[in-house]
Length: 209
Image (tube, rainbow, N blue to C red; front, side, top):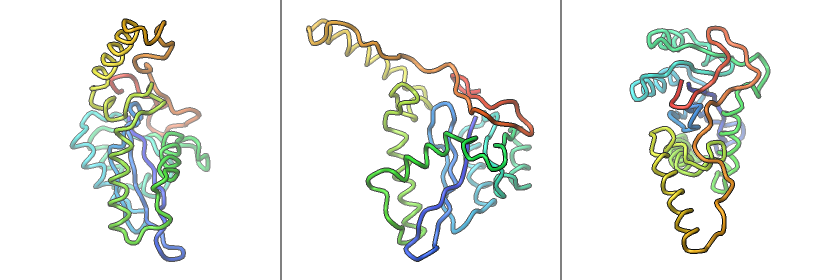
């Protein structure tokens, strides 16, 4: 299951903004698509999802708010072609898409977020750089694994490495007990308080639903 939304990045002139269309895999939190345009653009969104579906062909549901690009006929036709269900937030309820809000909060809260972007090329390049860094840093919502490792399954090797490190620390006397920290991954991730026009209450299960 994917979630997507649009946030706006400041240009160098007053009231100049660039629209950052972004999609994440709900379970892993990994950013799987991002495109920056001069304004909200359903055609750009469709192209983004065409590329996503080519790489991730087993998407079941896409969740979003009720913006013009999200509800566009063109995007709906693409989803129908790929047999992807559409899930929508309640009108005027921004926190019905909380994982996207969290991502954008993180994006704009990093120390290297620019006060403004000199051009659309600058904005797009920055978003690409942020996406790479975000996907490869530990995420608290998935027990400290990186979104990319959960998306591609390599988190299991990371977990094995953690276990080995703990056992070695015990053997060396560096610690006296195993840490009481969560292991593995949550069984499912849900989007709370949502309604849906064509899909059940959105959730993503381990190994993706």
